[in-house]
Length: 323
Image (cartoon, rainbow, N blue to C red; front, side):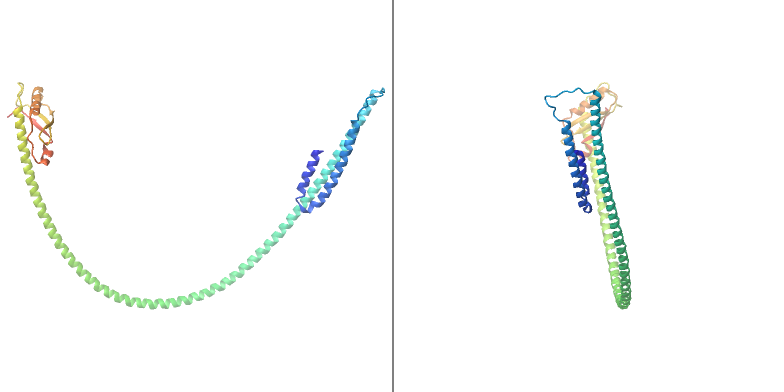
């Protein structure tokens, strides 16, 4: 019963959203609610009769079992008939509600069609008005364009006349400017020739001066190189003399033996280190050459630092027993 009432209330809420069906549905619902209340009261009374309290003191009467079964079957038949009636009534209610909902849906459909028809008619009218307005505007625009064309042609004629006048004035001014520019160009060319002549003279003098300076520098370089070569030869001879003075000839030494030493010196002439870079093939002679190099207290070196760094900071010396 509770489920039935909830379903009816749900359908009522849906139907009440449409104003056209609100009051008819409210009347129908009130009628059905009254009917449901009546059925509920009768159902409760029958239930109380079935559940009547049996008195404490019962006067027993022997009844045949078939009679009891018949009573029971009769009662069940009545209950079944009552339930069937309620089902039929509920089905009628549901059919009525369905018809009401279908009628409401049909009315909504027709209303939608009516509104659509009205909207379509309004759209057609609006389209027609739009086309009429567009045609009117096009005609007005055509008139404006024609007027603008005439004004443009008149303006172009005036502009053409003004342009011809300005072109004539410009041509006269251009001829005068051309003659003036020709005079200026001639003067610029004369000045350019003079500047070129002066530049050529300055370049000739510069080249002559540079040539003289290069010749002087070359002579100075040759003199310096000759002096440096002389200094290198002199100090190389002095170093060899020092080594020979410190050398002690081993018995196995021969005149054709040569041991090449790599000597590194400090600017003061002190020995940094010495080593054999090319052996003579005789260990005794190689060792004697190393001993002679390390025995020199201070090597004679040039005072010119560039000559020292270039030739005596590190140099090779071929040592031989030949005097």
